[in-house]
Image (cartoon, rainbow, N blue to C red; front, side, top):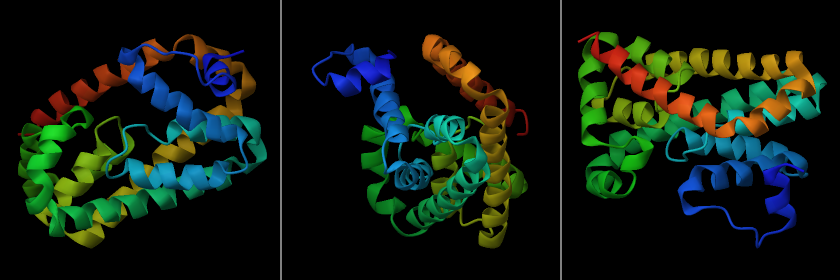
Length: 216
């Protein structure tokens, strides 16, 4: 039995406090085995585009594994919800950011909402607005920071939607297609090496920001 299943079947099971990312991962993952999986996928994809820390790939992958013939449907739902969430993030940047920015910096800095990150995005939008949104939408760069900072910078809205749609679709169709292709054989690998995968994600995230700085 995987750790996720043990937690679902035994709510009293303790997880170390420093494994908060694992708790969120397990909580999201359990929706793959419920009748609310599709609604959860939509909500997760929408929320991750503006504030939620767990990427929708976590739920998209097991859904594609469990119902491989529906992988195109799952990827489509994920893409639509993520783009809509990105639009919500853009509107937050346009209309609410000046009111909530200090609270967000103080409480959500661990999610990538830092003044330094915002300044980096805002400066780059002057020259590379489409490509910055595309890069953040496809890579481990914090897409939520991208969507809100894009609204703050008021970049060209149609271009923002086009870049978000292309990049999010490319990412989610690739993920769903990969798990559809590899099948159940890849699941034990994820369960066994989750911590290493999250570490790799962080390394890619930092590397992404360093790569962006090269464009300055």
